[in-house]
Image (cartoon, rainbow, N blue to C red; front, side, top):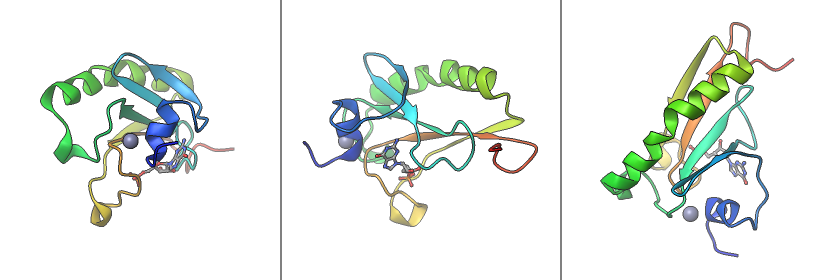
Length: 113
Ligand code: 5GP
Ligand code: ZN
């Protein structure tokens, strides 16, 4: 097992609920969702945060964004959606492998029953 939680999710050592995968990226449900459908999109290459991303890595990651957002919208029918990404502890980053949050928003609370 390597030390990074998300690298271990990618290599299958830590289980996750996969929602999308291609050659460059992996998307999975957040273990402590702040709203129904909250998921994370990560590059398969280990990069701590946005400062370490190569331009082509960022492009490969964002190429997957519209299809994931549209699939999430179709499945959960949220009223809106935030894409959010934290860099550094002062910005709220707790896992040091780049990740983009997809957070569906609902008319009522967090969408949970
Ligand atoms: P950050 O605060 O770094 O932007 O977000 C880290 C996110 O990773 C949090 O929303 C947290 O719930 C999620 N997370 C941390 N560990 C795991 C895990 O082992 N599995 C999954 N699916 N999500 C995790
Ligand atoms: Zn990693």
